[in-house]
Length: 231
Image (cartoon, rainbow, N blue to C red; front, top):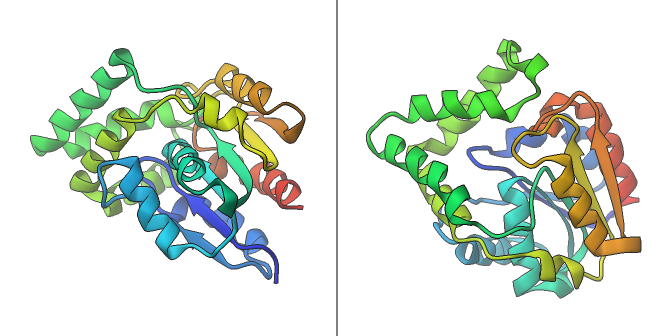
């Protein structure tokens, strides 16, 4: 049996984020999708993840999933065999990054979660995909499944994230850093910085014609990179 794989979705996303990759990744490999919508701190999310996960596993996270992955490295680095960071950042939360999250929380608390998902959509995908109605509906369905309360907890966890650059620099496992070439939320420059921190243990993959949701926007390219990473 191949080494187990733990997948961590992004904000307001669930297992559907990785559906295009699932057939290839699950071929002879156990996969766990982390539950990350029931805790409002990364530490709690990771405790839940580690209780459910195998003793050792490959770890892949997109966006918020990357923040969770960094916390796994803090709590149990010896359990991670390899790490994939998709569309994420190792930098800490700042007052500037917290402000829009606080505004979205306020909207969700007022019962305007629909407005939140509409606003997010504008930044989640490459401009050419904004009129992709099936993709928009899938993203909306994931958000509805997570729900307003789950979204609020996730945002609060993200707003408390620390600087993960030292953790990444000290990681001893192979690392894939992957980003969409048109990602507005976590730009290519962020990915290059992270890849530089891991040096020869890392690989940088920039996916053309993709925004923040690379697994859905460029599924074949991302699948190929993940299979290469898994060896």
